[in-house]
Image 1 (cartoon, one colour):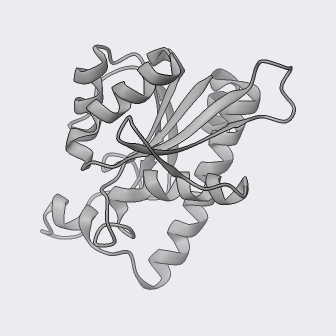
Image 2: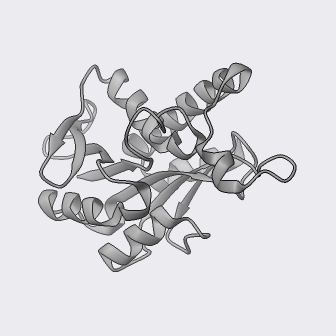
Amino acid sequence: MKAIVGLGNPGPKYANTRHNVGHLVIDELVARSQGKLSAHRSRTYLMTGRLASAPVGEGGFVLAVCDSYMNVSGGPVKGLLQYFKIEPSDLLVIHDDLDITEHTLRLKDGGGEGGHNGLKSISSAIGTKNYQRLRIGVGRPPGQQDAADYVLSQITGTAKTEYGVTVAKAADVVEDVLSRGFAAAQADLHTS
């Protein structure tokens, strides 16, 4: 089984911000499967599923978002992995990334957190940095705008439409990881 966790902050105040693109991708994947997220004792909202094309007993996945703020998402992610007996190597975390050009998608296996507090919390809680990430570029803030203000401000106007396209593409990448594996999806994403 694979765990797909989208990072973000709870509540309507943060729902449509760059910092919540991980949540938005999970919402897109849940909508595509015509399912819904349900509260779970791991302090996440989740939905389980299985790839229709997978052999019996394989292809299982859980889509999840934490019910906590991003900076303390490690506890819920650890609880999720423990409950479903999922190894960190089968965890894919979807998150925003200031160091990547806006709307660019990158898959990464392990490595550092790049100053991302959500990733730091997860790495600390599960005791390893060896998990997969889908990094969604949000770019740097314009002018002298503070980075926190930038990622937590509402996405409006044409940017909202552009992020809708990016979220859909990110959901496609997650589906590719689930159906063909991380290495094949990464090779295609990084050469397209």
